[in-house]
Amino acid sequence: MDNSKISEYQERIDSKFRGIGKGRYGRIMKMARTPNSDEYRKILTVTGIGILIIGAAGFAIMWLMTYLPGYF
Image (cartoon, rainbow, N blue to C red; front, side, top):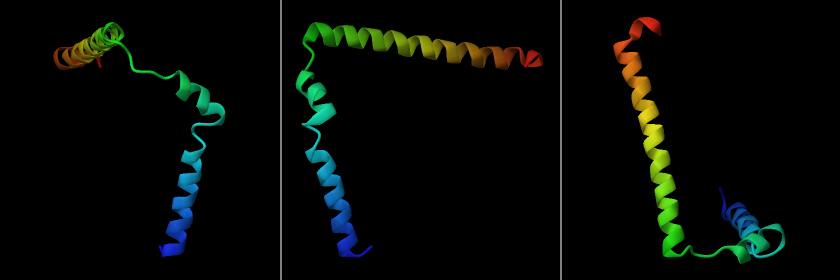
């Protein structure tokens, strides 16, 4: 790529990011905030439980396919 194409591409990217604070994303960006410690703990708990459930399901499937291969 030559420099003119690169600069045009960079200008398109920059123009998209300049508009983030306005329009449809502006309201979301204004409402966004950092969670407090209680909210953060709840998020970690729910995420951890989800990871454990998905891991347990994967382990159960692996176990079934290892010890009961005739059924699959």
